[in-house]
Image 1: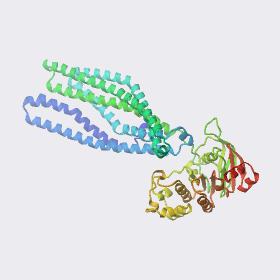
Image 2: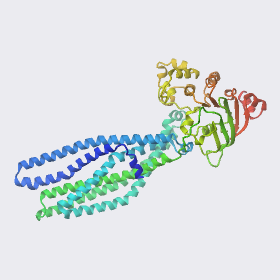
Image 3: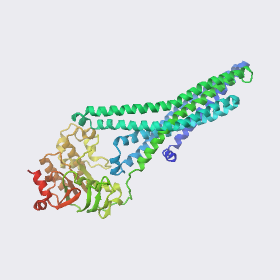
Image 4: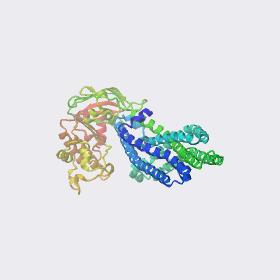
Length: 567
């Protein structure tokens, strides 16, 4: 685990070197300055040597200034390292997000993913930047001060070391308790975040559904649970801190008492006693810091486990093979699939989708239409049978290559909080504005865009909140037209449009994509009546196939569905 943790620090060694230099300067000040104080009190004052007092004071001031400058530099460097590590880990996690299969997102809630991408990553980067240096600093301080305690007066040093063993014993006892409390607190925070994120994401739906009281009560219950676990964690951590404070206070009293006796007996000077007292306090301070770091290490272990699980769980098996040439025929060969092991959604599906033709899937809700698209796009790979494009099994094809060849316009439209134009271009490195304009015209939204004051530079808000449902669909269709993919899938893409606009757009689509393979899914059968072939699904099986006219002649399932819709 820690070997993996250290791998995240790669590329930052020169900055760690800067921190080590600053660490050395700060340590030197902490270790040397008490000796200077001791010398001034015991020797310089006794001799009445003013020059020596001034020289010692100037040297001490120089040490303090150097340590202060080192503290400023180390803070800036620590922040730099923290941000570099955060960006590195988060980029890996975001890349992993796009490599997960559909089952991963079925089982994990979005709030859990947000916690991993934000809180867990911040925990790790914070520990690997500032706190890991603090640990090293504390270890150096404890080691160095231990030497000076023995060097100054070994008899009193034994008392300090006995206190150290007591603290280590208590720390060992509390370690597991702290880690358990940290995990409980973190889990309750995730449970609280879920309904809050759900509410914020669907605020208008909650208001229109009169669900405010329901959601407020849910949040309040989880808020109370989070408060309990948070208090429990704070109390557990404070137990160790309070123990350190208690032992520190008692130790200071003991040192002063025993030291004073030694001074009276002539076995110790006042300067040495003062230096010993300063060393003792500086010895206990890093111990207190280590107690807090111990709690943070417990949180770090939890975050590391979650990050590693996230990076390695439910990823695609990607062999990197590419589909040769343009996408050809699509073949489903005895494909059976279920989102859950005990229930199949598709049963022995076999079909041929010819290159450059228009194919459609019809059927009632839950018949398996969208599931076929999910499998073709590679969202799930745990199916039996084979899916081939150009003779290549898509399980062996690079997922990036597969998805570049497919454009999907879904009923669940997602638009980014950006301009209309950028929602069309997305990540196109060589944008073609003329092609973008033509795509918007073909999608029947160009006239609307021209009516806007800023045209296609108008920001459409979060998930296109400034647009109507129909405008969102037309913009999504324009995006697909612009991409000019080999395979275009329209999954209820025109469900929010009126019949006239829908028919016009469908005709444009068929004209624009005359060389592409088009797959259409629609509840309204009038949308797909011009398809070259229609597959009719019922309960996960293809029960009919043919053109619109051929299916009407059969007077079967499709015929009855069409008659019902056109009454």
